[in-house]
Structures are given as structure tokens and as C-alpha cells.
Image (tube, rainbow, N blue to C red; front, side, top):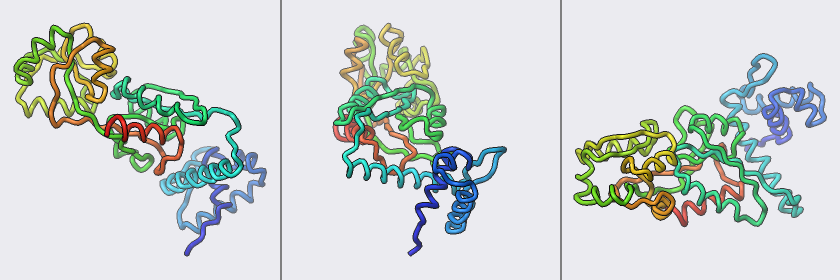
Amino acid sequence: MDWLNYHHLLYFWSVAKHGTVTKACEELRLAQPTISGQIHLLECTLGEKLFIRTGRRLALTEMGQLVFKYAEDIFATGQELMNSVKGQTNGHPARLVVGIADAVPKPLATRLLKSALKQSRPTRLICQEDKLHQLLADLTAHRLDLVMADTPAPSSIQELTYSHPLGESGVMLFATAKLAAQYRRGFPQSLSGAPMLLPTSNAALRRLLDEWLVDQRLHPNIVGEFDDSATLKAFGQDGYGIFPGGSVIEKEICRQYRVQVVGELEALKQHFYAITVERRLKHPAVLALVRTARQELLG
């Protein structure tokens, strides 16, 4: 069996975090030749280069990125062990920085995130909303702990991230009482010519809806397209058209936006994911969020 020298891995991890050997020397209180030599030994052990120089900084190679992810898991697990043995919580709230993609329904995100706050250790929750590509960039730069999305990470960054399925939800159409009463009769054929509010074409739900409309040979009047699901629902609340929403938050949508169900799109499922840079989830608040999604909300 090949054994890994964890001191070598620690020196590598410190340099990878800081981007320079100098800062790693300050953190570890070691001389530069010592750290550089130990990293060289690690590269010899693995048979791969881990860094390339870009200007004054060191950037990770593809293999370096893989080794760094393992190092993150290894040293985080070690810290958890020490905390558990010593009973250290330090009394400080754990930070959970979450990115929420525009396409994720806000009532659903709220329900899931509340479970992350119901931990024995206090948790400070920090939420950011943005386009998925920007959130994923922040995630891979370790500025976020988690991204909630309605699609897995794209293939271009799958090697840097892990998409953990949270579950799925049925899709329903909602509208004001007047529109719901009008288009509920003869549903779904009644949707031809009906005013509809839809997500923009870059949303996974929009692609599902487009396929469903083609299969049903329906041609609604698309009044508006929206990146943000909350804005879409607000226009629906004002009576501008019929809009889609998840069946798992049916009651919240009807209550918050004072609308009614027009009908459910059978066999259509919207999927949700927790995207992290960790292959194995270990943050207690993230584990609680995932557990709630899988066991209570999405089934």
C-alpha cells in the first residue's frame, strides 16, 4: 500500500489556499525551502505537477485541483474530530453562505433554509441571489458553501463541483381567480391562446414547459418572460397571465400571491440540487437542509 505523507499534503494545502509560498511560510512558520521541498516530494509521490506559476502567484493544475479538494475534506474532517474530542464549539455561530439561483422558488428556498437554522449549534445564515453561472464561480472560488439550483452544475465545471440531488416537485399552473375559472374548464386544451408568464429560455423549467406545450400541441400567448421567479409570480398576481409553480409549494403560492390552481401538468417534474465543492457533505446545517428536502419536502 502506498502511504501519503500528510505533512507534505498540509504544506501543499496551505500554499494552494494562499496562492504563494510566502504566505504559507507565515502561516506554518517554516522556511520557504522547507515548504517548496516538501511539495516537490509530494509531486514525486503522486507523479504529477500540482502547481503552475502565473506571474507572482501559483495556480493549481488540473491534478492540483483534485488533490486540493481531497485535502480540504481531510483537514476539515480532522478539525471535526478534534472539536468532537475536546467538545469545542467556542460559542461562535457556524457560518453558512448560500447562493440561491434565480430560478429556485423563494418559498421553497426559505423552507429549506429554515431547517439549516434549527441546529443545536447556532448558525449564521448568509444568502446571496444571482445568476447560476455567477454563483458557481463564487462557489469554486470558495466564497460560497452551497448553491441551490434547479439544474446540476454544467459539464464545464462538473470536475470542480458535486451536484447533490435534493428531490423533485410536480409542476402546476396558477392564476388569479378570474383567469383560473376561465381556463380551468377544458384544461389543458384551454391553454391555447391563453396569456402565460414563463421563465426565460435559460431556465430548466422553461425547457420542460416548452417540451410539454409542443407535446400537447398547445400555443399560448406568452405575455412575459422572467429570470426571477418572484417577479414572474408578482405579475401573475396582478392578473397578467397564467404562471407555473412547484406543487410542493402550492399552498404558499396560493396564499402569498392570492391565486388559484388552474391545473397540474402530469408527469412533468422539476428537479432541485445542492451544488457544493465537497463530494461528501459534512457541514451540519447543509446536512439538515438536504435531509429536510429529501424527507419532508420533495420526497
